[in-house]
Figure (cartoon, rainbow, N blue to C red):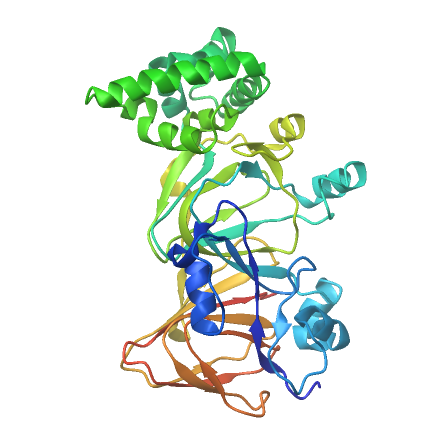
Length: 422
């Protein structure tokens, strides 16, 4: 039924082992608020909520006037809902996948290929790289959110090579000296950093496990004696080692920036940017792909040679990794996160308690709207009947349709909207 062009969705939950457990998980809280009949199991992880039409997690349509069961089927039948530019640019597919993540244990150190590399990897190893698309992604913190992202400034890495002898042992004297002498020469820095990282990643398993055990023993003893272990990044090392004992990824903390995002702050992860999410809850939006090249903190397939070859070896401070939002000139409630890729844009819509009527403006592309806090009655000419929105509600909004909200919660609302502005 094409006349109904705005409708609620029931979205797929992924119960990956790294997710927060039971109602500690923001994913679980959103799901049970959106549908109180959902049963949340106290001992199960609720890692990701997928809002989109990805074949591994296609959202169900919650409108019995619509004969199509899933969003993917509906878009395939009515591709015009995407907006003409998006439909033509992305071959009739919704170009993004919108998610909520609740992270309890670290995700693997990883990077995502650019389009050119994705095509090659998919052709060579389809069992590891399931599609030929790139996968830029953005994380926006809902609660304080911790991650690793991009190579640290060289001075910091050189500092760790001096203060952490076990790390130095894996990198080796030659590569470490090369990195130290390259400071100030960007071209040489990049080459030297690649050499150091590649040396470490290609270490024999016995060598790095022995060094890691020595390091963990030393740091544990120092911590027990009340000494400051920050020179070895001690707290994070012990936490990651307890989650992934004997894993080479534990050493990545000496190469990569540790990022702490406050709610509303974001990081954008472009192609070839090494990263790992460590802890917290976030909104995530990405191009519709599942291609991940892993480097550690994982029991999954590790493709060391591809990873070491592809990474962006450009050191930069942690502060440069925080991606700014920009207030929309035409609507003071809207903050735009607009990354340098065409596939997606995210809007944070923060409606104050003083506002009781608010219109979600029409744009020339399909969008998905998530209610994080607040309640409202939603009306749209394209919905044919009013819809009750509350925490956890998810709406699909076709291109060029608006939604009028009559807000009933005294403290206003917090919404996130994913779309593709071309």
